[in-house]
Length: 213
Image (cartoon, rainbow, N blue to C red; front, side):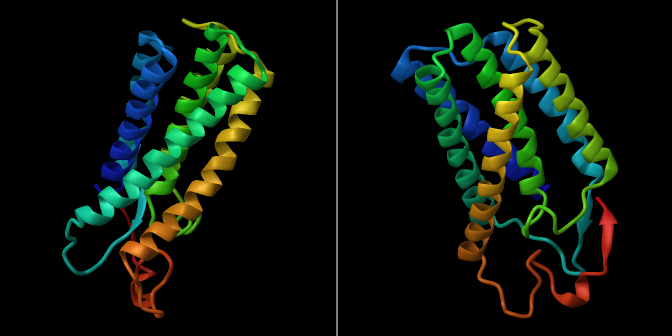
């Protein structure tokens, strides 16, 4: 539930602020209505699998800490807006793409970066600290394969080609690593941990307890 809440808030902030600021500042719709529908369908298809993910659990009842949930989600969401505008700048000013190709570029970026965010929100430690369940991994890989093929071959949008698609993936993966470090820093600020705790947020005695949520 924490993973889903942080992911959903971060993605809402990312898409909402990026689209709103693009329209107000540049008088440009970065994605079309059809792209928004496809983003929603693919995102929901992948996020449903988080219910079967591997998680650590505690013997004590869990409590919502909205300060932490909102703090981490806000950082991830706002950094996502910055990275989206960074790619927008590169596409428009550096590579001088036309508006239709730029929309496809941003669609793929929002899709890839959004799904990678799932692997950030599922653990308080580094993204590799808890191995994801196969169903989650395959769901994300499958939906992103579909999203990439849609952008490359131009189904319902201007075709982007494999070269630009690989550029988007590289850009999103680089920001993914940056976001993971920022997430860890945010957790350290919001939840100061004793030295005897693991990076994932559990005591050593709890580390062997793993379940499918």
